[in-house]
Image (spheres, rainbow, N blue to C red):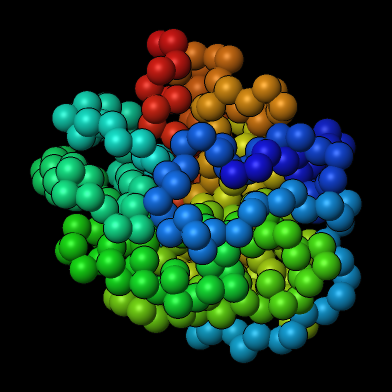
Length: 327
């Protein structure tokens, strides 16, 4: 996806969440690692950059909030999960290499990209990955998404049904970023309402829990009588915050708002760290460093974020770049 920089340095010192800026240049999600087949190419719109310096204040049409899902983790389990790790796996990496790596890095869940219509070879690889993750005690969630799904819930539901029909997955992990749509600055209320309706549709399409990737500034966007952060949290079982910064203080600093909102709503909240090189946002990634330095920083995040009962560990983006880092 397009790369954007969602905050300035002052935000880290005062703990604010900021809206995306037109002049910014870093990322919430790398382009090269996302499979093109998550949705048929013909139906995929161009992912233009948002142009507004701040989300428009216009109120979107109110969407009826979903009944919050009950959090099933106990306090003791939540404390255990606080130091757990998850990771994105966008590539076709060999499961025989991925799972031993994941085990060695204390990974408890893998978000694996599931194409719109997997080939026989892709399906065989997913089955192999499932066999190995099950033996290792690692959860496997189907990862997919396209900005266009915010206005096309039927496609999102169809993808979910195709993925879960395989019987391979413990959960659904959506990476749908509606602010990448061309109309985000001119028709934001409609896109926000459509995005929330899509989450409702995907959540109710099956029993597997739904986790969603979200930017840390989500609360700056209006939704009905409230904001988009609270509206999203009310509709999913958990969120993963794209809190991409190059230090423990940075990751926690931009993640605090959603940790607090998740705590109030009784939802698990993961923070996330980036390991891909980002030429346009050096302070958004741990890429220049080593795995040991990253591990030390994430241990600090565990300690600092543990004051929130919602904190559910850290997700690392992504397997390929992380595993290539110097030891």
